[in-house]
Image (cartoon, rainbow, N blue to C red):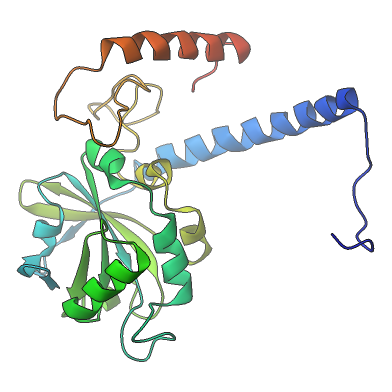
Length: 254
């Protein structure tokens, strides 16, 4: 650390705790504001996707509906890996690569009936090589073959588009790009941009949206079983934790 830095004051433990409590009030206010924004996002109008898009995947041609992998929600990130992009052919765009490094274990997102996929214009052989080299093997990654990127606002810059399906009908529900992409990568950041949100009872969502108690659906990434009841021991532990949090926070939502 440079000795020329003008650092904050050095204080006692008691003074530090007081300063933190003051900052925590603002952090809680910001969190509630973000919750309210996510609630508004869940009420955004939907745009039906009527064009039939086609991608190349590891096993052949795939439609946009195929990318859902049978789930009801889909998030597609447009990653820049193709001729003309800095780093080609050894690397994808530096920013897109940093984003891929942040992607959390997808088992948790999948447990919320949501699929994440990456899409680039590089051929599948190059994508497979890149994924293996960079440790991104678990991210579904397809090749764009038509106007998907330009049609959804990511023809020249990166961005995440969220979709939901009703049977075979597909709807675009939201988009996050530019600096908004910086915060994405965790299961929570992805779910908060979707039409259904985290699907928990404390959320302000439209009537009829799926809702479960928080914490109960969590599991080890290797242990999710569709429609299985929560682990009774985990229910006991999480109930105790939730009660302690509510007592500490005066009954506030998670």
